[in-house]
Length: 351
View 1: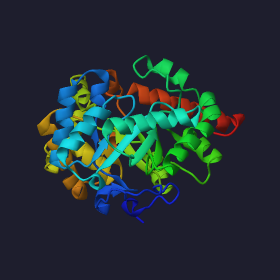
View 2: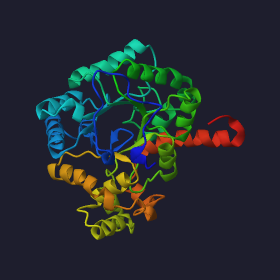
View 3: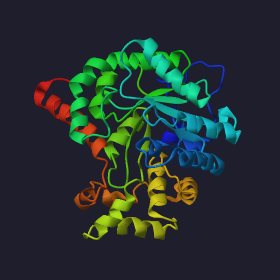
């Protein structure tokens, strides 16, 4: 069946007194709403708390019902306050959060971390809880990409994934989250997780996907395996494409041309619709009310967007990358998995 009709039978919601958020089948993938709102901006200090609160509040007013946060972002209280003031029924919302790194160690400590986030948000469970990255919770996402790759070595991952995923499954079983999944996991990570937990795959994987980083084969493999794909920072680098245009790069013009031909209001709106047309959930972030609205409006244009409209951009652009048009941290984690795949292919063992 098409992706939006798939049900994740391997990682179904845990038993709870509350029913999962009910969404239209045309707006979700494996129970995860296609359109979500990200709250990462507050974590790096680029957006003040009051501005982030107003942004989440505006997003809920516009119609967003999927809100994405994380232990790392420290936005739980802001999101919880916005939800409370919105008066929107809990069953109409889909709340995603993420535990820093892989939650290893004693389960009691992991449970306390998840429970603390819930308490700050005024909630009793998440709809989706993810392991934020395939490495220790001390890995520095504000340092160098090389240091991040070193901290998230595959050997460390292989040694700790069993305990971490067992803790995640127990959180689901005890009702702290209806679903559990992963973030920043690539092929080798998912392969190792599947090897150790063949009957308990993640409900979702949140990775960086955008106009120049399509992850086409990987996305199709995950969707075939019943894993919902969520794209973070899907339009974060569009401004960098404009800078690259001054160096002769054509990415910005390709996006602008495609957007104008299909009556999109911006290149950002086109990219969001294109991703959703591929069955990928998106979590754009913005503190601008007009942009919050425009991003949400991309959802209504999915039916008219071809999943192949940006095929010529697949493979990326060196000039755009030089102008900051690539997520170097996501690329660093991906490189760890790719090196493991290469090692396995050369006879070094399982990937």
